[in-house]
Image (cartoon, rainbow, N blue to C red; front, side, top):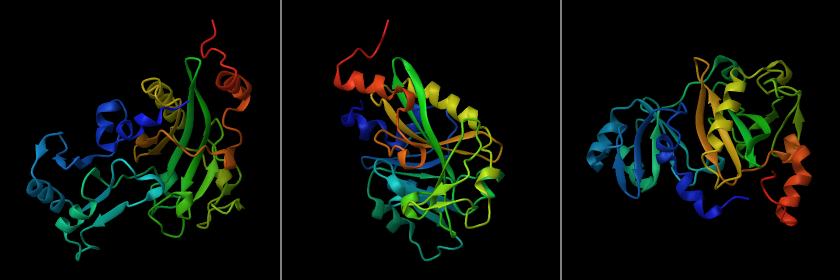
Length: 267
């Protein structure tokens, strides 16, 4: 259903502002695409200018623009805490194809669960018969002071009900289920703010990228309650451990389209 040959180009984070200008995103401080540096206005700049921009920032997050799934190679810089870090060396470590962004803030409801990580909403959507369907959604949360919310990095994932309320239990990478976050929050008492606005944004946006019939979207909710787009994945994990079968009630129709060559569109 997905066309993997398009994945690297279409999911390059340096182009998110052009692909999705209608989605609110963290401020981009610096981009590097194929060894070309760009400032926050997408103007090409020199290495020295790029270095100067980063040196002027007190805090930022730097990560690969093309391959950064599961929190790999994401680095949070804080000038006060990282006084021994040389900015030039940091840039050379990443080499090419990376993005530097502001450290995003999150809504107080999400921060109350675990304030050290940006806790994100992962939604799986699929485009079928001309409509965008929401397969599942989870809230990913960091634990024990981690900056990352990925389950593979020790985090938790809790299914989200259609109205935005969390289910009673969250799961970790060992398939262990918990009713409370280690910090004390009862998952069933949390309702995601602006959750329907996240789903509306996904339904609108997925139609513009049909090369990926199945997409994993990561959003947070910022301090003023707006959905904040973080990234999307054209080959996502499917949330099936936490949320059940991918296609739900449409499973038979989807499988018939794939294996019996039934038409995608029905008159």
